Image 1 (cartoon, helix red, strand yellow):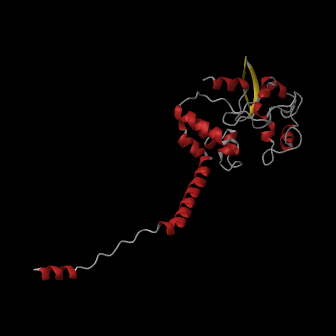
Image 2 (cartoon, one colour; image 1 turned 60 degrees about the vertical axis):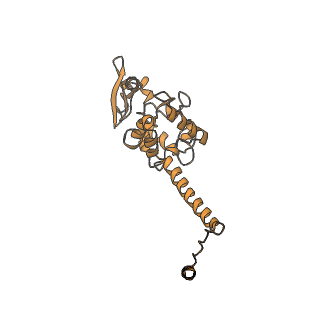
Image 3 (cartoon, helix red, strand yellow; image 1 turned 45 degrees about the vertical axis):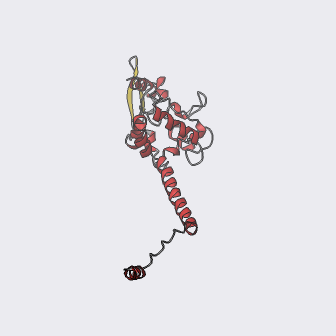
Length: 225
């Protein structure tokens, strides 16, 4: 009996010891792989967050209107600037990191009111290099396009005008000059410019504006609805 147990014991193969994973030897490749993955995700995420799709997906309840005017409404300047900004919201909205963090906080908390205050911009912003750059107050191309009008919207006759007093991005642009210059102002000047339309100024008066634009009166009426 003892011999049988001995033979049985001797015949049992020794268990192969398990190899321990060499963390020290694999540490560097693992760290490099993790850094690469995090970098790729970070770069892709940063690129996506600058697009209108990110604004619409993450903040649709607040940014839906702005997404629509940027991607679909062909009458807005926001839509017309898509190519110039490479379809990047941050091409114009130069947000800082603290500002972006604050916007995420109010979006998550719901601590905001609508409509949002309009973002204002200076002439220098529009006339910076790479955009509507030109000599003097207004770009030469813009001046030449209106210099033959009976009244030049881009002259400094009434002082230096701000671009955003007429040119709006996510709303209809407003021909502010029509507040005073009515249709009669074009008589004897070749008539209303080609491509312009006559609109109501209120109080029985009419004014001419570029097609797709609004008069201050019609813009105010539409904004109050």
